Every structure is written in C-alpha cells, then in structure tokens.
Length: 598
Ligand SMILES: *[C@@H]1O[C@H](CO)[C@@H](O)[C@H](O)[C@H]1NC(C)=O
Ligand SMILES: *[C@@H]1O[C@H](CO)[C@@H](O)[C@H](O)[C@H]1NC(C)=O
Ligand SMILES: *[C@@H]1O[C@H](CO)[C@@H](O)[C@H](O)[C@H]1NC(C)=O
Ligand SMILES: *[C@@H]1O[C@H](CO)[C@@H](O)[C@H](O)[C@H]1NC(C)=O
Ligand SMILES: *[C@@H]1O[C@H](CO)[C@@H](O)[C@H](O)[C@H]1NC(C)=O
Figure 1 (tube, helix red, strand yellow):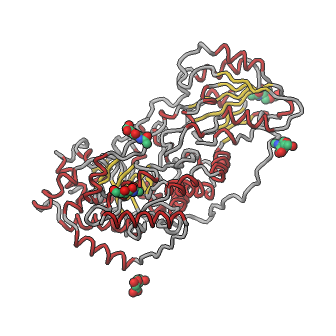
Figure 2 (spheres, rainbow, N blue to C red):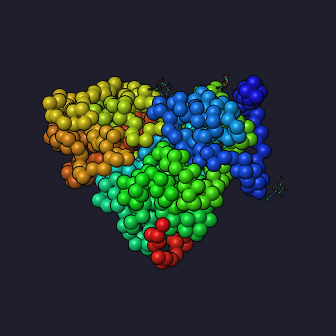
Figure 3 (cartoon, rainbow, N blue to C red):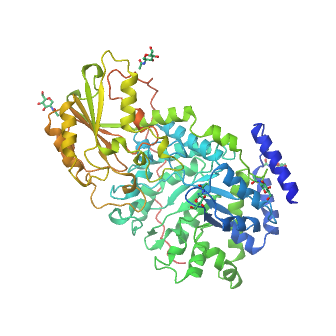
C-alpha cells in the first residue's frame, strides 16, 4: 500500500513538472454524493478530526504531532505549515491513513505571500480595484505554489476608530468602498474557480462587528443596533458572498452579548439562512475556547457545545471539539447531525478545491519558479505607487527637480530599516528581499543619467523607535548641507496590527521633535509617513510643506516615489468607474429580534 502511494506520488510530481495536469471537475451533485459516501465510512473520531485545524511552527515547518495525526487521519486542516516540501510531507502522511482525506492547508496571506504588497488599508487608498485584484491574484499564485489552499483574507471589518490596530488589515471606514474592495480581493484570490492551480480559497473575516470594538480596544465588547449591523457591518460580507467567497471566520468579539463564535443569529440565521451560504465557517484562533473568557461557557465542553450548535464548523487551534465532541454526542447535547453537517462543509470545500482528485502534492521546482517573479515585483512596485497619498504639497514642493539639486538628505531610521519594511502580516515575505526607501532613492538617482552627480546622504536622527534626541544634531547638519530633505517617520511594524491598539495615535516618541528640528533648517522638505493606520498629524498638516503617506507598503516600497520631476511617468490606466447610480445593494432593514437564546 505504502509502495503504491509513493509511486503514485512520484508519478504525480512528474505530471506537475510536466505542467500537463488536466483536472476534471466534479459537479455539485457528484460532490454531494461523494460527501455522503465518505461520511458513511467515517468514525466519529475521524469526523471530529476533520473539524480541527492545528498550527505548524512560525517558520512553516510542521511539528511531529501533526505528522502523527495526519497518519491517523485525524487532521482536517493546518495553518501556517507552508512550502512545497513541508506540504508534500504532510500529504504523504495522510496517504497512510484509512480514508486518505487530504489536509486543507491555510495561511494568513493578507497582502502578499512572498512578494509583499501594501497593507490592505494602503491598497484601498489606491481606489484601484483592478490593481487590488491583481495583488490578491499574485498572492494566490505564490501561496498556491507553496502548498497553501486557503487564506484568512480578506478582512472585511468596517473600522472607524484608528486606535484599533487592525485598521491596517481592512479597507477603512466606508461601507461601499469596503464592499467593492471585498469583491476585488475575493476575485483575485479565487478567480472564477478556486480549484485552479494558481488560486486559493478566500475567507471573509471577521464575522462580524469586530471593527466596532468599543474604544478601538482589540477584542472588546461590541454593542450596536440591528440597523447599524445590517447597514454598516454586514454589506462587505454580503458583497464577498456575491463574489463567490466560500469560507467565513467568526469574530473574536461578542455582539450584543453573544460571542460571534456561538452566535446562531449570525451563523445560522443570517449566513446560512438569509444568504444560503453552503461553505465553511472556521473559528478564529482559540475563539471557541475563549467562550470561557467571555463568560458564556463554564468549561471547554460547554465551549464546544455552544459553538458547534451555534454554527462554527471548524475549530482553529484550541481542541475543545476533539476532546469533548464524542461525549457531547453521547449525551445528546450535540446531535450527530450537527457534527455531520459541519463535516460536510469541510469536505465540500476539499472537493471544490479539487484536493481529492489526486493527492495534492505541489512541485518544489514550480514553487521556486513562482516566488518573487520579476513581473510580481513589478506589480508590487506599481501598486505601492498607486497607494501613495499626497496629503499636502504646498508651493509645489514636489516633485523634486533632480537637475536643480546637488545634495539630497534622507532623515529617519525608517528610511533604511529592512525589518520594518515588513508589517504585522507579512505572509512569508523576507526583509532581505525588500528595497528600502533610502535604497530606492539612491537607485533612482544613480540610474537617472544626470549631467552632474547628486549626493544622497543619510542620517537616522533617531532609532526607528525614536526615544532619544542624541542623534538629532547629526541629522540637522545633514539637512543643513542638503538642497532638499526627505524625512521618513511613522510606525514600526509591530504597533499597527492585531492586539496593537493605541490610546494615542500621534507620531510616537521624539519623531515630531525631529521633524521640527529639520524644519528649523529652512530647507525644503517632504515628510514621508510609513504607517499602518491614520495618524494625528496636526503640526505637520499646518507646517510641513509636503506630506506623502507611503503606508507599510511591502517589498517594493522604496521603488516608487514619483518624487522627481524627471522620473518617467507610468502610463495612466483608465481609472475604475465607480457606478454613479443610486445604490441598490444596501440591505433592507429587517428588524428581527436578536436571539440570544442558546
Ligand atoms: C453531474 O454529472 C452527472 C454525471 O456524472 C450528470 O448525470 C448530472 O446531470 C450532472 N449534474 C449537473 C447538475 O450538471
Ligand atoms: C523551524 O523551527 C524549528 C523549531 O524552532 C526548527 O527545529 C526547524 O529546523 C526550523 N525549520 C526550518 C526549515 O528552518
Ligand atoms: C513519502 O513517504 C515515503 C515513505 O514514508 C518516502 O519514501 C517519500 O520520500 C515521501 N515523499 C514525500 C514527498 O515526502
Ligand atoms: C541611462 O542611460 C542608459 C544608457 O544610455 C539607458 O539605458 C538608461 O535607460 C538611461 N536611464 C534613464 C533613467 O534615462
Ligand atoms: C509657500 O509660499 C508662500 C509665498 O511665497 C510662503 O508665504 C509660504 O511660507 C510657503 N509655504 C511653505 C510651507 O513653505
């Protein structure tokens, strides 16, 4: 049996190399029939295994216990395990299991896998749906080559409090723009069929209301009217469904007293009932077990009961389903039909992904050829450029006329900080691949064929966490000697993102003092903001001649500045036409009693 499996695996890898993989897709009726046959063969333990998602190590390796579970056929899904070799080894282990049900491999591919694009909030600032779709489709191609089937994106949480660290991960405050971006990202990740080799399953998250956490404090209580829910928070999710998204993740928060992970009103009434969703619902990390922290469940068994009955199919990380599922079924607290229905949702996705058609091995060579393709880097460069926002440009400070300056001073550690070219959700991106702002400016100037040379000097002013003014003097000297100054300030990668809420969104540390010192030199300057969230920049808005928001913009942040008048302009594409007719897609206000019964 094992010999056969190995031979099959080898033959399959050969096929992949030859790139002549013809997939015959099952239709919906055939899929449902196959699910029933498989379900009929599964033990309860195997069913509960399908409902469990476990994490690999941060570097993408699996740990030995995952391999053991895969061999026993008890591992439904992984997250974070990635790379063709790791993925193949785990799939190989499932071939030793009784029913050989393939593992569904997920990863947080938020705005790029290896080629990192601007954070979603930055991409959204481009208003360019085609560009955003393309970024997601490149992320999908890279991730799929590394064995990933499923990403936990797009994040569709409308967010109106920039103190909340996760504003970086979504499309900001606007319902309509957020809904359009939702569709663009789903189309990019999934294409018309996410079973294609270069596509992955998208996940609409976090369902729902997470962006409305009180005070912008992550995981905090959410309390809103049903009208607010339906008019502001649900539409991006409905838009994602209309674009074909086939998985949902529950939010960490409670909504009006009922945690989303156990919320029948959201999961059973709206998602499955009103929207007729037949895909997969996964919890967020530990959010099943956290029903205890919410005060809803007394223990892990109750947490499992409440979220299984609530409508959460798959449990991410915590193990309450696996540990308590059998007893809950025995005692009648959860019916076998509830378990079966959750398992069906998992298997349906696996069939739609085409994972059963052959063992889902991926080619290491194809992975190597796919990651960081020149055309992907070029796209990242273009999209980083489209995401820039010129907030202020008094007296036409920009663009810089490179022929009129002899010395350009770049000030601020963030201009030359490779690790901080990444952000909270860098996928599998490596800092070493990034072009920093300083590097980008130097490359530009040296490639510009100038009649006389321009010197680019750099002075950090302070560290990226700017907590001391001891190096200000050197920065002031560098600025004083230059004809033009680029001051780069903003946020390090860890202060915007999950569990990174702030009470103050001013420039942190001594950064504003640094800008003021540079302003004192009287030299023309631009403030470039590298940020993950909107910042309060009143002094800059009033005093700086030019402000350019560059966001945490990924691998190619340094290569798209449009700061120079001599820079060849990129062809202007036809901008996306946003419909001007009255919106017809706003959901009807249907006041229903919010059910908090369990
Ligand atoms: C699905 O395929 C089967 C053949 O395997 C065919 O008989 C059936 O009509 C198809 N159903 C649909 C809905 O296309
Ligand atoms: C990943 O990390 C683990 C534990 O730190 C280590 O044992 C393993 O060698 C690493 N794998 C790779 C591919 O670097
Ligand atoms: C699969 O497992 C077999 C035997 O355990 C091993 O010889 C083979 O190298 C493995 N293949 C992969 C792709 O891991
Ligand atoms: C600079 O000159 C080289 C050689 O003449 C040319 O290939 C290149 O395109 C020029 N670069 C720019 C930015 O004009
Ligand atoms: C812009 O030019 C006007 C008129 O010369 C001047 O008063 C003003 O200070 C300039 N603004 C900045 C930010 O340099």
